[in-house]
Length: 361
Ligand code: NAP
Ligand code: ZN
Image (cartoon, rainbow, N blue to C red; front, side, top):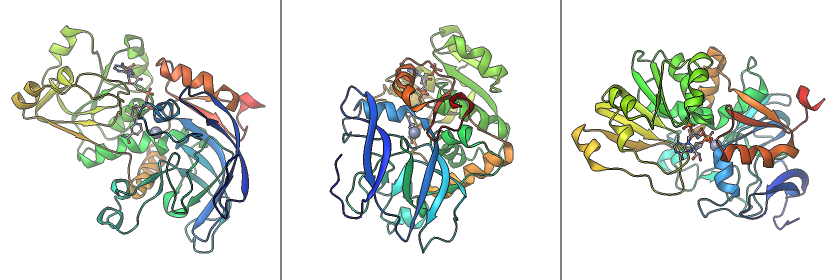
């Protein structure tokens, strides 16, 4: 049990990977005492994001082991610091990807702290006190209140957990591209996984025509009947891809693996935009012809700010948007990660950290 940071006196039980095998085992570690700006959270649920898989396996070459993953956290506040006014003991709250930022740069001052160049993440980051951050695969979390949001009362804490990353990551580019209040656009979602399935729900809630572009024909029925997609294109079907040419205003690419953007860009109208949120470890192929012949735009987006995260939670509360989840016990994390790697999840695993769900009774 590594412990070198002063004031990290609280012993916490969690689950960590110790090397690039990605194998997760129980892990006891220390967290800081609850500071004046902090809240302490009893973790109830934590979603398993594909980013957790990238990190435990060191896909991006940046993992600091041992890593306690988890940035789709819901829980209950058990303690608040003396400077904290907007949370109280007993509140249902969520923590997403962000743990700290500089609080002073143009982005922090403009509520875009997710683009602060000193941004630190909920796990595999370095907090202000120099300690390595540990995420939500753990029973308790201490978080600065500026990086915590309220979970609306009507949302179940388990199916709301993945909203903290998957939800805000797809909400923000839609907002950024004026899709929240301009219904009737044709949008495409590439990759029907954790991020993709929430993106369909937002797209429909905002009144758009939603087309899924997928490598998995087996997902078509559910995409349409369960999630509300209007159309479904299997990307390996050249005929369907041809019919779809120049039909979409906006595409959100959530794919976790290397792929070519060429055929996908062809689906955009002239001047259309593709926003990349998927984070494959190898460069994606970006041929110039579909770009220049259609005057098309390619951009990226990184999670969302805290203000956008709260806005997204409120929108989910209003429209009753939650995630389609498979709840697992902590001792099933490795199996879940294996299944996620095999693209075998409908559509998000959520760890029942506190042992509350029926499956654990
Ligand atoms: P996920 O649940 O595994 O979904 C990814 C989907 O991509 C799969 O369901 C699959 O959809 C498709 N896919 C997988 N392998 C593919 C391949 N070889 N070729 C084409 N399509 C493939 O993952 P997720 O949790 O949604 O995360 C997706 C990506 O977003 C990850 O790279 C993650 O790190 C990244 N991410 C980024 C941010 C950000 O801030 N930008 C935030 C969270 C996550 P089909 O079966 O439909 O093809
Ligand atoms: Zn994530």
